[in-house]
Image (cartoon, rainbow, N blue to C red; front, side, top):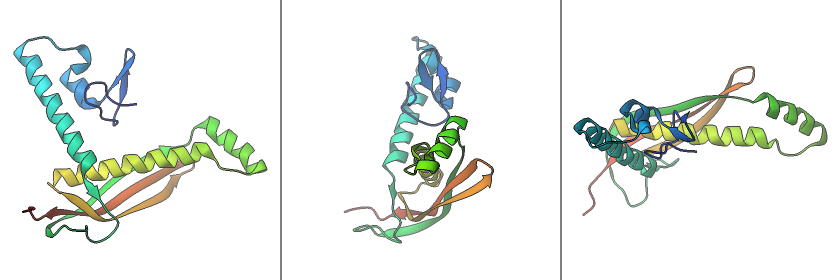
Length: 165
């Protein structure tokens, strides 16, 4: 599921039969565009958001301290991305039943996989704000912060690369 206007998968709200992110809702793109100057400005901002999201999604993330065939010329600093997820009552009941007979707890597996994806996306957003080309030495942590709630955090070092010749 992603924003109908820009394709983002963060902060989605259903509007009619479609979903829109917070930025597109703020810009009014969920209401459709007319030809007024204000609407054209909103469309330009949405296109900038799409470009930004493309840059964020394309950012290089590695667990190593370097990237092959790239020279780091500047360390921009520590960056993070996190999300807190809570289990669904239905999946919790199914997990209890599954633990009796054994097997994978698919509801929890999906919860953690989606949480990791969101934490990494937010890490990329944090690095992008610093103008980073990549995040090196990326790590993930998972912590139970309350009964039934888990925080998933991605962290690493934002860096700039030398220009390719």
